[in-house]
Image 1: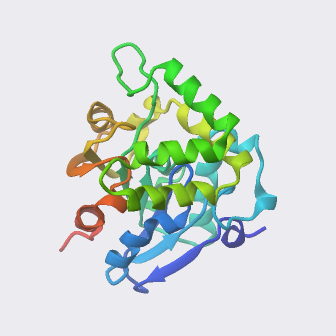
Image 2 (image 1 turned 120 degrees about the vertical axis):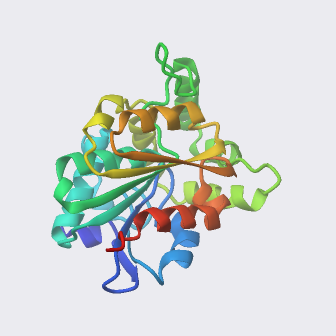
Length: 268
């Protein structure tokens, strides 16, 4: 099975321009990037993908064992870059996909130019002095609720994740994305996401990295952004004056501007 069908690869934008690979987080698909694509496709060639189990990916490729670890998703990213023979790629990963990108860049650094992490978190659970934003009981309750009623969980969590309580239109965008995801796959990916711990991997990232955080994000609070910045050697932290966990949806102008500024090739 080719990666293009497996991950529903779509290539848009300016041919021959620097390449952005946009990688969505839990519960979404490549459509969540549409506001960013609209703003950057004239300056970059953009590769879009769906994780297996999401969007229009090939259902036959689903393997619960493989995708119970973030390394399974990272191996897909490396395969995509190798099969499409992409080099000097700027990988843009949202939320858990930021860690997927980090793992892929560790395995195949020769394929990456830069890494952009949009509201990343290497661990969602508090652990000693580390503040991930959730207790173990919080995560257990979240996963139990998702198991019991995925669509109900989606309706309840979309406003929490998106923030911006005065913008129900944004909540609907995320809710619709959740509803397009296969619940059985979502249950596996949720555990992979919320129980992962990639803190020890951050120091291994050897490419220039931009961390984009929001001023108010209950899923990845600013303590997490600061931690990621401290742990990745060649990293820069940008704090957007934005709410919620999905600034590429809620504030696409500021997010696209930050991505473009960092992704643009250095002038000679």
